[in-house]
Image (tube, rainbow over all chains, first blue to last red; front, side, top):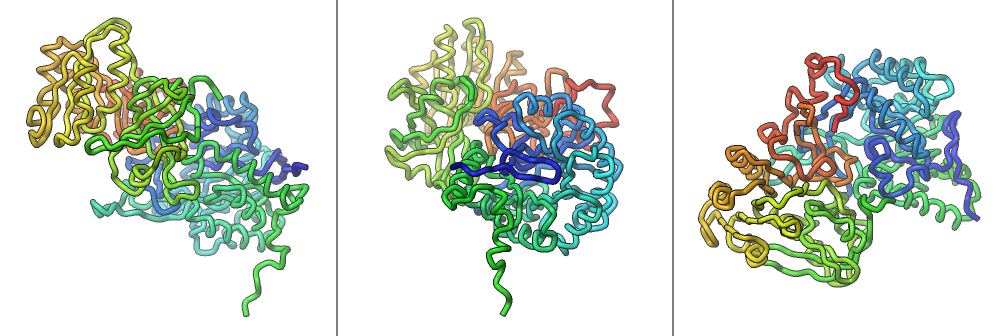
Length: 315
Length: 298
């Protein structure tokens, strides 16, 4: 008996809980050379901005133990090309789109939300809050819970009410639960976590940062325990808020770990770079793992780690 | 998923050979071999299934043969842990391979005179190109440059595959002392070359492009940028390239390249975002009423 893989994220039901994470799958076109893009739960698109964006200078990426540091700088063609070229392509292949949006202020996020929620085929919106806030010396919106809440409110109130809006959180903030709470209070329908972790690699030959931007985002299996911990903590505080868990998912067992921590869906990120078939492989492995345990519905394991006695109390 | 796009395979290693300063691995990969066109590359996962080295290593395809349904050979030198792991592979080990990737070299319609300029291991990609060109009746002349004699790859094959083969080494240990670009102009004149194909380090490609410009002949360059995914999703291998519409875009070496027309690559601006590139800071202020077609960032 193959388990029922359907999962619910706010008002939206997906066929299965394995998604491709933002920035690690484009709009699905490249990965579709390796598998049927309609087979995965959804594609979370690379963050869309209002205008074309050239991104950061190269080198943009450096390999680190079980991960990488990257600073791409949101290179992309802008919302117009996205809506006319990329989104229709994904629709034509039967793929489901979670559109990630990124901006430099409330007005830009508002405008993006309006344009995107008016388009056909948008299942959900994910707000990338790890964008530099020009009004705060380039600190990220997610660094300040009040700023993050303003952005969430702006996007939520300009998005069609039947489209769930998820806020994507970075782990390295002063108080993650407070940030999550501020987003929920600003009417986010759910949370995506985690974004990459800020870090740096230094080239041992030149003794200069290996990535041109200096600091970058660390991703890959190296950050998985950080991500699982964040999902667990936030699910403890807000058990009714759906979470898309991500951070170094490489196998079906990794995906199961996130579900048990409290995520209702799991996004596959950097591992797509090393294994372009990763999403469908992980989906298959997850199905097998659930079947082996005799689980009939994937929803049964969501938050299981909290029910199975949860974390041992401090002694 | 399609008959011409890349595939991901687990391919058995047929042989691992030392070739002077390089290693050459031949794998059995019929689906890659049948799709291959010269200039394309493969990316290989290193370190095994639970490797801590997450990024694939890209390698130009050096040779494709029909044996065992189709074999693919690639060349590398040991530069770090990933390539050291590869050098330790043995016959029948399995490699996780994705390919063929990237845009191939465009081939001329007519039997013209072609000079092929390769720097270091960059010459590897030119051997299958030489075969394709000769099948079309083109004259092929090789110019191969390297640091020293042990880094001149396959001199004998180059001599066999071409009308002439000229070698340069920085230390003078093989062929002419000096750089490949010191010899290129003379070869173009002697062979009455109509087109240049080049692969090697960026400074070499820049000089080769300048020399082709002096002779007024087209040049196709294959860049060797660092890549993370090779499939076009990570956006880490970008270089500034001028499009047919005159607009500079940050183009992905892996899918928009690795072969570009030399004069389209903004060699002086590599490692930067040129101020007039599509979507550069301040870009909007300079742009006109461009339609969507103008705005497709690479």
